[in-house]
Length: 65
Image (tube, rainbow, N blue to C red; front, side, top):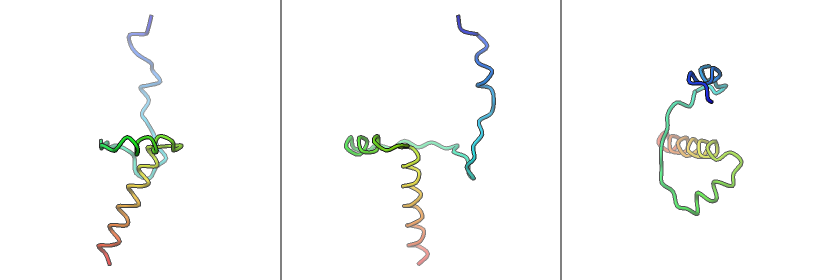
């Protein structure tokens, strides 16, 4: 029978070694072919974060020129 008070390990706060914590979420729709290709990557969420960061930086550089 499960413990009704839950697992005490889950009460510990989440920590990260990133300079900026990942606190926000987004949802987006992509074609199945893109999802299939993305699923083959080692770490799909990190791959998406890096791709978005590269595009944002590129756009920022265009506006500064």
